[in-house]
Length: 70
Image 1 (cartoon, rainbow, N blue to C red):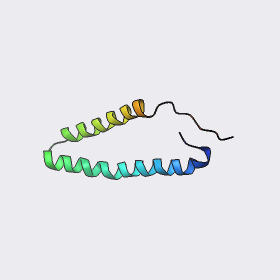
Image 2 (cartoon, rainbow, N blue to C red):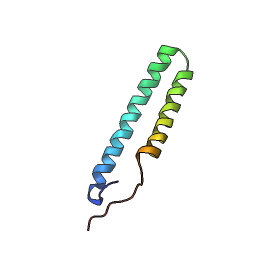
Image 3 (cartoon, rainbow, N blue to C red):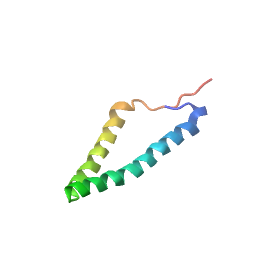
Image 4 (cartoon, helix red, strand yellow):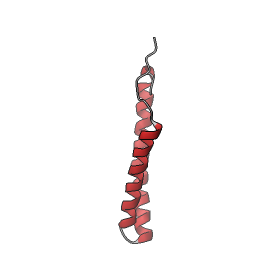
């Protein structure tokens, strides 16, 4: 939930998190492939992160609605 006046800040934090994930994921996948020598564990890592994200949304986000200040 974000205040209408903080829409830019909220969008910026969301973009920062997405960009950090975009940088960290190839590094982590490369490290996993380098250590294991196959793509299996890299695919397990990506699947686990997707499942973690979905579960976080379901259990942590709650009711998403805009807060309006009068």
